[in-house]
Image (cartoon, rainbow, N blue to C red):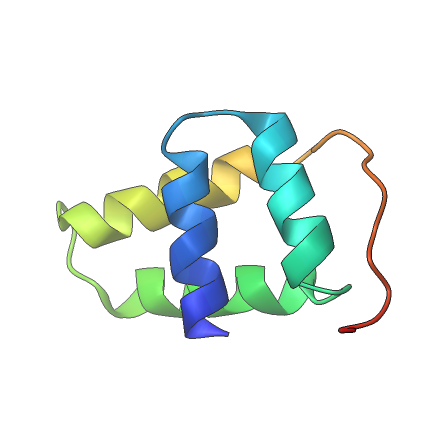
Length: 76
């Protein structure tokens, strides 16, 4: 889950909603809420002004209202 979140944050750094939606659809496999919960848990323990916290906060803001993309429902 942490690796998935880390990659999602990196994808989101370009502020491309479609790229983020496609990444989550292919890799989160319906667990987007869990990914967001992990992001929020990390935000809660990181100090104000921390770079990682800022990235996670930006990711959470960007992960709302993503465009619809085809979702992969299985791993293989």
